Length: 115
Figure 1 (cartoon, helix red, strand yellow):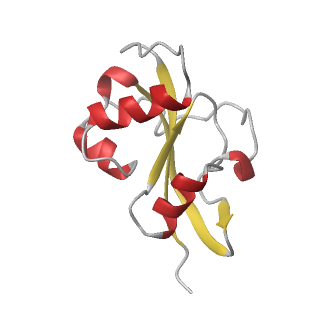
Figure 2 (cartoon, rainbow, N blue to C red):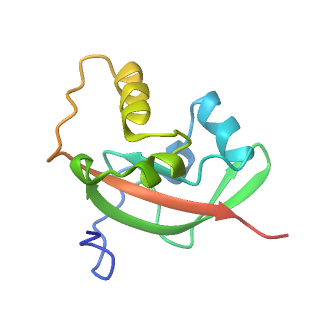
């Protein structure tokens, strides 16, 4: 399922400070409701620190996944109860974007840095 877990990751396509930028997503992360985010590129390396409103989160895992592989558990990590609700939110952010089961995205899983 996670093909790239133990292989060398390709170069990042963006910086970690662009990983989570939408206010609604930031609120979900700070509330502990969102522990993963999917992007069309790789924005962070495992072990890298993301800072949101002064709170730090460590990137635990980065791997590639197809949209067709998404489960409701994956959607819950994204802050949504089901894949369908997650899908609708993504399509609302990106009007005209197709939702193709074979389309691959980069999953970034993170957790709060313990103080």
